[in-house]
Length: 308
Image (tube, rainbow, N blue to C red; front, side, top):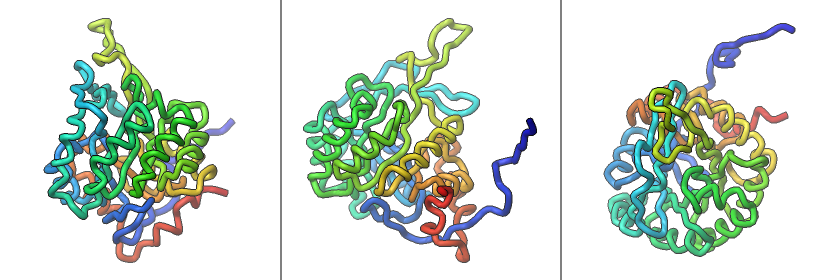
């Protein structure tokens, strides 16, 4: 049997998109590129810096019902094809609200988590007068009792989504890939009133140091991100596009303009960039420089175009 290998899977010159502001899932964005949750989203100053560096919007660190220091270290391992982390959702809880005081009117989506629909709604309410929208972290793979512990149950996904959507602000739901069928959770989020779906969070994984004969992370297991999971994210977005009617924000291993286009062709209306920020916040301007051109095409013409 023959084998065809195409570098980057490109058969012709890369497309360019028209630049300009957009709206996705009820949130007005300056462009299609957002900062993903958990990356430089810990202070108002860092969020403002990312926005001034070319991001079209930002998602904060996930904020929960009580302050938490996170897991013991090591918390992050840099791999040859991505990052492995087990931060454990460290956050200052309600005290984070003050960090957003200087970002009024900016495209800031606040990531929230809780152990029940009531806790999700409680945390979100703290930011109702400061956020452009909410992103529900129903997908962290390494925080016991939170994240994917809830997000693998469609009934809980629907209930948590409904609780936060009742506040009247755009509500995005970030899904875990660590399920047999991600579309079930996507449909549950949509039924609960989600404005958009974010796919995906990290993939549960681990590495072991053969020298130390121990897991490299203090928590043993963590979440894999970066280029290694990009094909998984593309597949999840593709499946969700066929199963749901609300917009999808693609996330997972995006590191280039071509990655953005591929994710949009799978069905994403915008993307979040996380691990690639290890190269510096200039990654947003670098990707935008390749992605946009005044004579580019309307993004709406390519969203989902890979579907038959």
